Image (cartoon, rainbow, N blue to C red; front, top):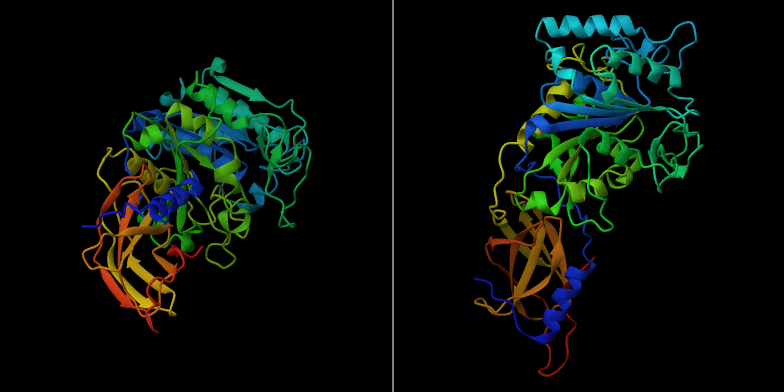
Length: 461
């Protein structure tokens, strides 16, 4: 068993490693965790194509989705399975040809009558929050007007909030992050992220309307952003225009087993990970509210696809049928995928520690460095790995550092010396697993002269 050294410099080094670790560090994608979640209290929101996805997910799964927050999107099945309609009537229509609300209502009722979506009676008590920026030139305000008209067919009017008074361009509107509020991104510039600082907290407003009253948002996050493998929920995710990894923000209370709710936040077109990195799931405004209100925020991810049969060059969600003609039904591939993610999150909390890492191997890469590799751990709330070393097979072992990868380079070793290494998986609440196998290596060269100081052993950044 590994025993930490009690020497002062090793303790200080370990403390410094913890002090510099980010509270939102993201481990390598693994299995999505399960929590103490009430599935019937789920909610959704989204911007642009994510708004369309939020609407169709809300309508299709209204028995478990208590409300939706939608920015810059139109009514259910607006595109009618046709990309040309999606890019005209459902985004930038003429005054004479806005989205056909009557058609959307009839399709909704038809799908429900055939049990292809949940009964529309579940929508009656839903909470709906809608937003359209008055300067939006990508999805005209008249489109969101029609979404408002659509919801009024199924939802109590007093349960609907619609804000269209803010001079905002097409964007996820935030209180203090992103481009200026009136900035009209067109996606041709790498810096365009379609998140605008409007001194208006859209994420907080919609969460409060759907789930409120809420506690004040966190000034500093206590939880973690976790990456998970989306291939668990959909075969060949890239072939279906979904990213291999999805993300979630998990408050510390939820990690500790408290009863929590899930909110699904769908990004928009051109906000996929490959294009804007972590900016949406870190900065869209949800996490600080989630942190203090026991809300897990699920951020499923698309990927752009430039080749048939799935042509989706802007990384949009499927709201016109680019991947599946049944895209708006419960059986739609992306729809079913997100539902399976929710089912996993709600499948029951386990407080078990992560499983140990395995298959640790080590090789000397110089007289002062060694490279380690191991097989990824599995289990609940995996956050990363602590790497330990000793010059004695039985220890004591000291920690060289922490990594979220399944490999590390250790520096500061002495030449001509045998080292023993082991790895422990560590949970997001700093719970360590048992030990991996121990692996040893002897660095080349002559051993150091007795009494000569050697560098501090540490992981290379």
